[in-house]
Amino acid sequence: QVQLVESGGGLAQAGTSLRLACVASGSLEWRNCMAWFRQTPRKKREPLARLATEDGSVLYVDSVRGRFTMSQDKAKNMVYLRMENLSSEDTAKYYCALDPGQCWPSWYEGMFDYWGQGTQVTVSS
Image (cartoon, rainbow, N blue to C red; front, side):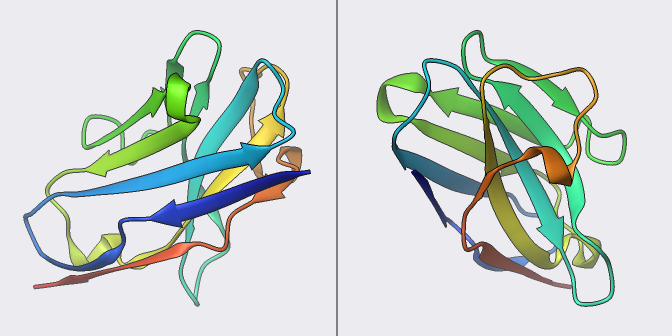
């Protein structure tokens, strides 16, 4: 079993930055595919970025590329999502997810076996 715990959410002003963190614990593989998703009440869960832990390579969806940065601290089993120039459109609950093993070029919600409880980000204008 793997546990994921997100942190770093909260209230932010439009135009500012925020960094989310996710710590993984439990029975971790030597390599994992970790990802960030977000969800609002009116939308289904939306993928944002995914990272291959063995080499730190990251893929972003087009809508956040250049504004969001996903990174990791392997020693701490942590991944981060730094979000720049926040807007009200970024208001959502943000989730960390993990798929044991390698990442694949194509990735989607159903691939990920483990999920955190989410952290709420609310951006005020």
